[in-house]
Image (cartoon, rainbow, N blue to C red):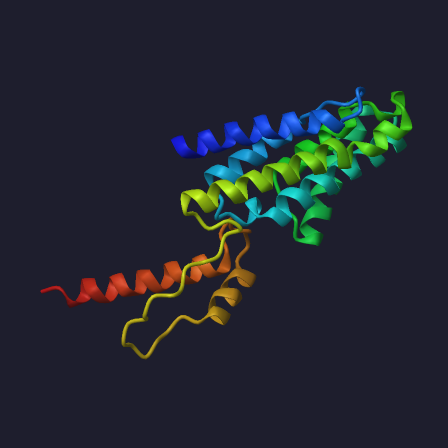
Length: 209
């Protein structure tokens, strides 16, 4: 985790410095949700929630919805709730689910977009939010390549399955996930590999005297 902390520190510094060159003076060079995104990208890069698609798409889409809601709804309490709720639905529908996206939507509402210059407000989802997210992902790609981690994450090859008449196949995993009542923060390939390893361990344990 020390390496992850160093990577996140570097990413935040680079993100703020680069965005500050092009950011309108009326908007921040760095948004708080990027701090949460950095935890996912650098500490748990194997999570589907940390994929580049989720980080960039989830944050940008959520910020855009937050701005739209903030412009249309004057009541701040109602706007905050609607923005976060819509962000969750939109991210889930587009395959960009990213928890900091909820914070991006809320941040957009808390800017009180009705009181700001319209041009700057409409730019907010793209600069700084999208640009922040893209730079963070770029630094993450370089960092994980140097450190030897897989990012964007790809599941390791499946180990040989034990000699048995029962093998867990990918369609079995997909069927189990569809029938489960909850959403799990793990890629299908990783879950499949864990199940095969567990099966190997069970066979080895049963073979012991």
